Length: 329
Ligand code: HPA
Ligand code: ZN
View 1: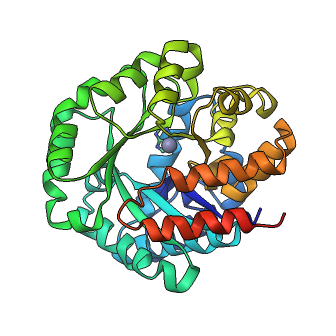
View 2: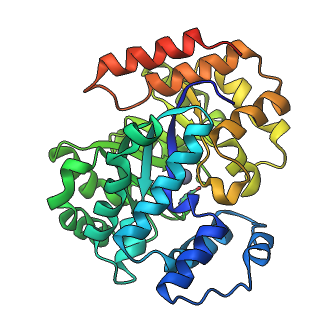
View 3: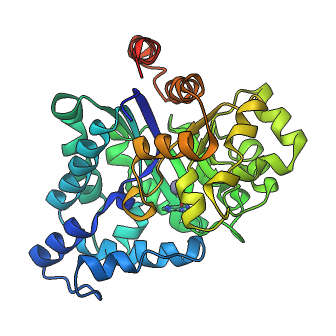
């Protein structure tokens, strides 16, 4: 779908398509436990978030050099451009790489090589969001933030991802305080598999400006009221919710109800190589499954630019919003 849009919930490691994984495995002499791309694709049947994360972290073994990270990000931008993406705020998981002996500089500078040329090559402006793995310790998150200090000019925000249940936002109070003091924006995954209480913590303890997923906010009317009042954007990922079996079928996704409740929701792809579609495909899927009409799709696209970290470039935001308004379906 070519409606102009921003993608605000996208894990760059989750854009690793099987073909690129095998090409990088060969180049780097890494042995993958799957015979070929077909066999790998057949492994993409997940029971829950953890079963996906196991494969997601295992496949990252093929990412070793700056060129690898550059190629990964450039391939994502090329695909995103074909689906109407004009601006992308991209998560990366430094601890998943440093734990394998890949320096954080390799990751950030490799990604930056592609992002710096994103506008010229693909017509996409970008921001980078550094995520902490919530199933690692708070000390490890603090060490990661310290490690990233020489590269902070490349990073717009910090985020929180990986296995949610049992790892509440409050565990990361200190590192979020430090990130804020360094001038970084703050987001966090909350309410994907975890309870509404985790969304409250993300808001009140971590001071997040956007909630990633926030799917379970609908279980708590007081929380919905708060999110509506403060215009806190939620970055929903409907195809991810189905693939990770948080909801059974797309037809049951609460997106429509969330829009009707006045929430500032956006639609995103999360890990498109694994979950069956990039963000344009996701817009198309919610149009089909939930019967959203063109004006509702336009509202989602407008929301994506309203929720973007473009406060330092309001002219650009206004330009993108005008593109949405002028779009002919
Ligand atoms: N949820 C939490 N952590 C993640 C995800 C997700 O969907 N994708 C990559 N890391
Ligand atoms: Zn995510």
